[in-house]
Picture (spheres, rainbow, N blue to C red):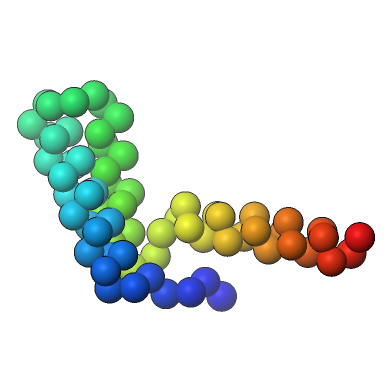
Length: 68
C-alpha cells in the first residue's frame, strides 16, 4: 500500500502542475510543459504515478538485498 501524500505536497504539486499547464496553453515554453498535467492531477487526486513506481522499485531492490 502506498503512503498518502501530505497536504503540503499535494498543494505544491497542484501549483506546479497548474503553472506548467497554463504556460503550455499560452504557448510559452516548450511542448514539454504539457507534462504539467501529471503533477496537477497528482495534486488533485492525491496519488502520483511516479511516486508509486519509485516505491515499487524500492521494494524490489530491498527484497533482493534481504535474500543475499
